[in-house]
Length: 305
Image (tube, rainbow, N blue to C red; front, side):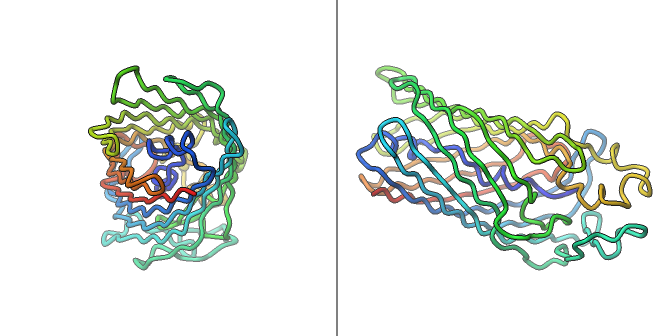
């Protein structure tokens, strides 16, 4: 119940630099990102308490290929390492001791204070430029699936282990005679159901960038996820014997709402025609049924071909 939804760190929306690539005279780009995420308290509608802290390090490789002026395909996958530091023990999950009547099919213990991880999820998608000009509209569809059999029980797990289909639209607005760029990505996520729980959700990313120079653009952004029909802790897991000491408890990280609003700052810098770099720093301003992000940092470099 204390796992942070790593999707909040590994965002699939394009940065300003990447958006410019799609209109530049290049057909193909590769991007390498490093992400670090540190979390604090667990929060829900009913309570907030110290569940230890987690540290996540991730390397994400992504690519965009323009088929023509309208269509492009993209994909990404990540290697993730994560640990839980929990001196009090309130956030530690051990499948070997947390269940009495039920025996989980996977007894791997990842909350021992050491880093655990591996390959996380693979995402592939397609995007179409439906409207070009100062106001650009690009519908997209993407599909994400786990690429390794990682554990799903514990604060230090690296993902939800679920298949997801994202259907959404990316919008960019560059006012005439302005150095501002406004972006919005809105997606509805069709998630694989778990124990009959509807985990479909909305993911929204809003950003504003200002080109201080033709190559350098600081930006601010907000990212939000809402899962209306997911479960809440502790209301949907008590009493323990009836609602947790079973498969429902073992899969609680998959079925919880994991809702958040994150805010951040960053920049994009176009080094030259072929290289671009970017960085962001962000944190949670609201989180429900998950660990709050105290601080998160990402840095990336793009190579265009």
